[in-house]
Length: 449
Image 1 (cartoon, one colour):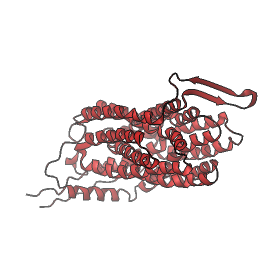
Image 2 (image 1 turned 90 degrees about the vertical axis):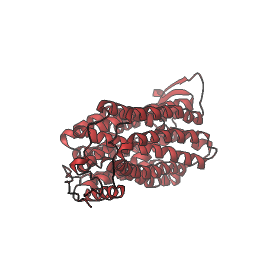
Image 3 (image 1 turned 180 degrees about the vertical axis):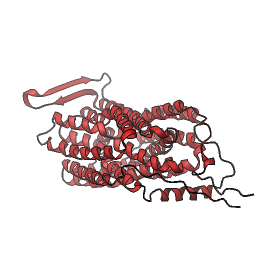
């Protein structure tokens, strides 16, 4: 009697059985937990301000932080997505391991006595963050095929809630006050509200994240323990790996996937450095940590509302025109921040950062949805989304030194010029994305005796 060498994602028998976890429970857990995952991760750009002061570091040391997060996160994301599609019945365990690694990484970072050990602990936390996205986005893309753009954007938006609260709280605690200053001369405005407990050391801020993430670990496993596929029986794992790998390679042939991945990677290159560059540039212009934190907040806060709107719009009108528009506008905004700051801080910087925040992460949401559109025919959503996240973060490591190297030797504004150049390249490549990405057609899978 013939037995299949591996279960192909293209076979009709490979389709998921009736879902064992309600769609509402799965979506609420994944979308809600993403806020906790980002709550502490996005406070790192502000905490780095305290770390470089404590250890007397320069701009290249900040670039090393960006690179470490990108390299370890990229490798983990790429491998994690491929493995999740192979062992989809273990998806709840993977998500739980992700949050556990985040909490443990930040705990170790809070007690690390040297900059080198801080980087090692940060690498562990970054691996945990990267491990979250392939299974989470893959589950959402697979369960809600007609509304991928919307649900992927909603997942990003709740992460943005954590991105907003994290840096704002970290900046206030480190500075010991809620402060704002702006304007010049007689029109200058300065407001300060000291916190009753004074300043808080950055190590305590990170250490307090551990209980939150460990509680989230248990809750996620309990709620999503049945979210994956049924456990396969008598499956040749080697054959499944070969089938999935062949499917991934074929999906890049004539589908527009190369252009989608390139735009996503180029966008990620600049985004990952800009979130560090903006607060450090503002500190150089004379603002304090809390005001710098507000600008980090503004880089993500407007996207909580506009991200899902843009994602839902892309489900109706297509991904390509929105990607092109956002890449072009972002290029101009990055240059505008430098052009208006020749005489120091001005409210125009805040305005441009807020406009940037309206569209921040939207390109990645759209490219992820476009990749999932193509990958859906092979049920390799997690593999492609993991590969895309890994691709983005690894390129982000290169950009970290491209941007912070010149900053170390020249001045902060050169980082913005380079970031704008990277965005400009992404804009040009976005013109090559097909209007309607070509779906991958299923191929027959042969069985062996």
